Image (tube, rainbow, N blue to C red):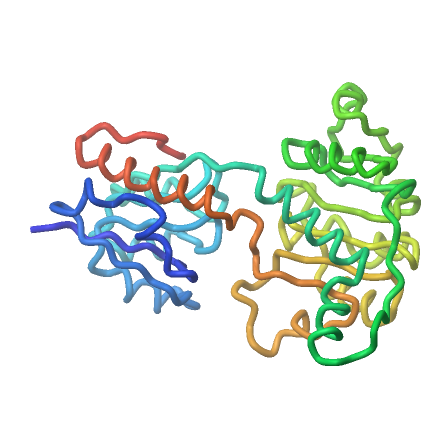
Length: 319
């Protein structure tokens, strides 16, 4: 009897084509779900008959309450090597092995710059006007050269974002609670004296922090009020780092020039959500890690993980 493998949130319907699943074909039936399951009850019902589940990033939580309802589940493969929405203790208690995959930081770096440039030059507004026969030139682009780019976080992704900013001729400043001058010097960035100084002096602010107790709600109404009215905010990191209601208020009131967001408190974003219609907002549906090369890596290594598990030698075990 073949095992059954569920691939969650395969929105583009590419999971079974970007990787070679043939090594499993005699032993595993692969079922791809292109629609997101919005409730735990719905997810528990959908996964009741599956032995293996492949999930992307941190889109789907696997708390104890869900794992307890999936007695057939034996292997959970999550893309990336860090996942904060899986209860590892509950997985162990239920006999579920959790494995990860490698993941490239290049796609989120590139998306950050796509969003920042889109904001700065009014790309979406101008494109929509051109296609609809609207006004010829209606925005005045914001310059990058000579302007200040403030980075909240200077890790692997933030460091590469900084290097691109320097290539544009920007002055790059960075801050995080544990950032050292040595790390800032390493990538050619200035170390801001404080978060408040960075926000008050930057023309563009980009968030590149991991979500944790120290960063949850890091940018609320008081922090956004420090930004220049001509400044732009970009968040491709985690939604909970920026207070969503405070950001919406700042955009509606014109207290900042604009924002670009790739992450949301609820994903997929509900149809009537105010983030869909907010002014001065460039929004994308969490595309940070969504690239062909990354998907080839994710699903290719998911196949490897399933093969290794079936051979009794699981790889890249998490938790």
